[in-house]
Length: 123
Length: 387
Image (cartoon, rainbow over all chains, first blue to last red; front, side, top):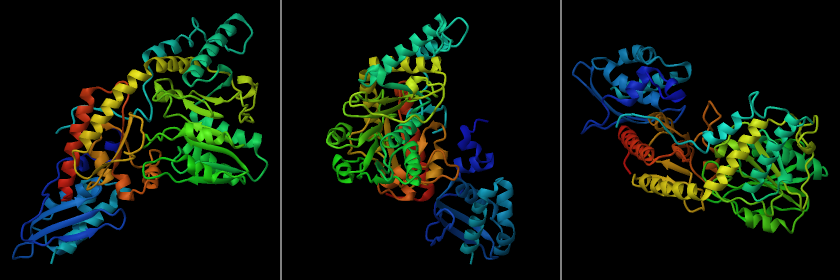
């Protein structure tokens, strides 16, 4: 696999895949987005989140003006959290993102930031 | 649009060695070539010395100097160190003054910082919004104790050309010496040393090898330096160390080719550059930095609104170019040059330097533009950004 130099090899294949083909981007019409900004690097994330009657996440759409790892983490999270309740997001999401995206210590903030933002978006 | 190839657009960082240059260098390395020490007094040494002197003449011809004014060094960084430290050692009287700018190459800025730590006062001029330092600014900064003015001919990030001839003219009436870092100018635009006391250049910026450069020191009026590297007194005592014949011959050969090709290269690259700017500006929210300055054609700096700098750079990882972050830094800092123009950190980070060269083809340029358009639009869609 050609990662196109050091730029590519700073990231895991999972990050590159989500960054190159992110899932569930865009907005949900008629819904106000929840907005978060990362203190570390100023990444800006808008989340549109729908829950079903059992308070589980039914749909998550997003836009992000941010670093590749934040884009990748949001993309993966938008699939993972479907069917999850707020407490599950709180306890499991950051760890899942860290593991599945193989984030380095320096990239860890992205998993924490995205998990926090999604918690904030859930009623 | 998939990544289907890799395109080198970082010629301002370094250029490939011209095959004709490499061939001449190779002839100075092996037993059947001019490998001898040019300081030796036997035939082989004399032959090597002859090659070195021919190269000196070629370098001199490239900048309209005479051969005796050229000292070979390991590159522009060493030349700059020699000129700045050497001039202060030769002419300084203690608490002296240096005039330079905020957008110099790190090689100058770091030496200025060091000189400051030894007691030299440093004035760092701010460029205008187009990355240009005016002769007026230099004139206003001059003091009776100004020993040296050091400015670059062409800015390495923006391509903006400084009014060197005008500044040289005004310095004729002042005792301060004038050093010009011409690393990005030589081989790109006509360079002459008229009115300049010291000039630094590097071979690898114009299709010569890395690890060799030159320092010009004017003979008339004589611009002295106190040597920085002491030893066996090679290069007329200006820079000791065995002269690397193959490197020096490579620099000379690159200079000869540059003289022959300058006009044709300039014309072709200027056309590419115009095409590049025009097509980049078809995207909304794009600024060509220093666009109102007189610029070299081979450097185009563009800033992109509505995208994150790191994301843009990763998305365009098939294009070998420099971003708006300091290249040497792992914890990327926004470019101090772009910030000096007044760009925000965010916009400075979301900037790319496209630098073109002799090998750049129409096809490569087309690919780079198509990929840039595609990725900027894609990232803006992800960001939900609207102009």
